Amino acid sequence: MGVRANIAANFVGQIWAVLIALVVVPINIHYLGIESYGLIGVFALLQTWLALLDMGLTAALSRELARFTGGSRGVRSMRNLLRSVEIVGCGVALAIALGVWAGSEWLATDWLRVDNLPREAVAKAFAMMGLLTSLRFIEDIYRASIIGLQRQVALNVVVVISATVRAVGGVVVLSQIAPTITAFFQWHLLVSAATVLAFAVVLYRWLPACEQSARFSVESLRSVWRFAAGTVTLTVLGFVLSSADKVILTRLLTLEEFGYYSLAFSIAGALRLLVHPVDQSTYPRLTELLTRGDNAAVAMVYHRGAQLSSVLIGTAAGFLVAFGFEALSVWTQNLDLAARTYPIVAVLSIGMMLNGLLNSPYYLQMAAGWTALLVRVNAVLAFLFVPATYWLALRFGAVGGAAAWVLINVAYIVVVVPVMHRRLLQGEMWRWLAHDVALPLTVGAAILVIFRLVMPGNLDTALLATFIGAAGLCAITGAALSAGHVRSALLQGLMRRGTFAWPA
Image 1 (cartoon, rainbow, N blue to C red):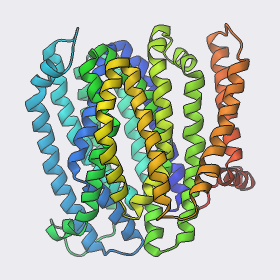
Image 2 (cartoon, one colour; image 1 turned 90 degrees about the vertical axis):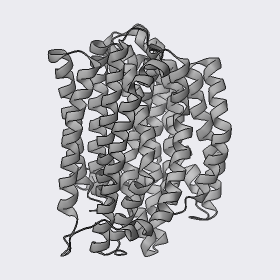
Image 3 (cartoon, rainbow, N blue to C red; image 1 turned 135 degrees about the vertical axis):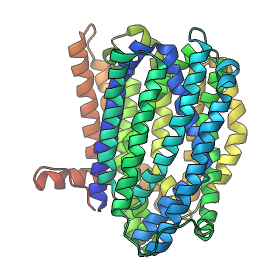
Image 4 (cartoon, one colour; image 1 turned 180 degrees about the horizontal axis):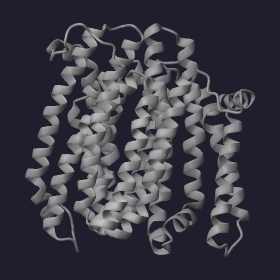
């Protein structure tokens, strides 16, 4: 499957999943309340941290399947590796479910600052979070495997169906059955179980058959241990850096206040999902091309992905900074909620944009199997960043925690990008910085500033939505036309039956 088809499928899947999830957020808050919504934010944090227990095997499995498509592994060894990771993953998933259930009472009574929800309901919610996290853990194994095989059209069919059923069904459950956090998590458990089964069917449908049955193989796991070890060390440090704000804020803020931060993080975090389809398609392609030693093609794929990411996440982040309050007001129809959430959204959006711009350099290093640089940088930054995050959060609350996320990503750009380009794609850093990043960001930001300056006052909801929508559309158009690879793809698409045609 070509990069063009995979990127298109990933955009459809990810954008639909993000949009359907965001559409139902105000409805969920209406039925559950902001304090219960804070528990959903706690679940997202719990899922992030417990994903570390895969010990880097998921990333290693995806990379090996991508190398398999490049002809470097046989079917039998690949199936043995998959079966080995499945068995290990099921054991870890069981441990997650039992561990969170055992600690649910302590988490509900001693960790969170709960004001209105019954402690028993919070403890029960934590127990279900453990089950749901274990299912998502298995789901990630199959998802990463399908990505490695570059069968992302089939992957996103499941993603779209699952996201729709999860979101729409959740609203039906809350509105027609029980408006409780318990009912919310019960529905998500049911959908996640079905999603795991669907992903497994898709994976084995596309994995070539082998005469011998797959079996657990210690040797298969040993063959990827070095990459997995580097990945898990990198992932642990990365999660410490990216999640320190949320862990600290669960202690410093009430659950209601953390609910506002969770809402802001959900909105700003959606920005990363705009570039995830690009990364999800280019990473296995970069791995395949590096395996073949085609450096010219590697550079082309790298710069195309970087430019498209800059256009998407740069424009979206700029929009939230310039018009975030207006967008929140139109979306939630709640001025108080918009006012309390917007400052956090604006700061987090800048951090998410910087983080998204770093994805192309990050995945190039991962495709090359070079994790040492990021491990060293993350170790130093984690030592400095955690106490800094605590101080900022203690002094400035939720906005301080968000500001810490901006600072860490500035440090990455200053340190990691120059060092990486001394080893990989030498001589390409200034092209990345000037053409892939700076130019589309500057054009998009300039257009948004102009719209902000000329925006009329006292617009009703419909006119306000139309105005800020036009601002966003003009900004992304200008950014896209200023990025050479994206502009070429758009022009080719216009000449080929009027569709977007990203070169394969």
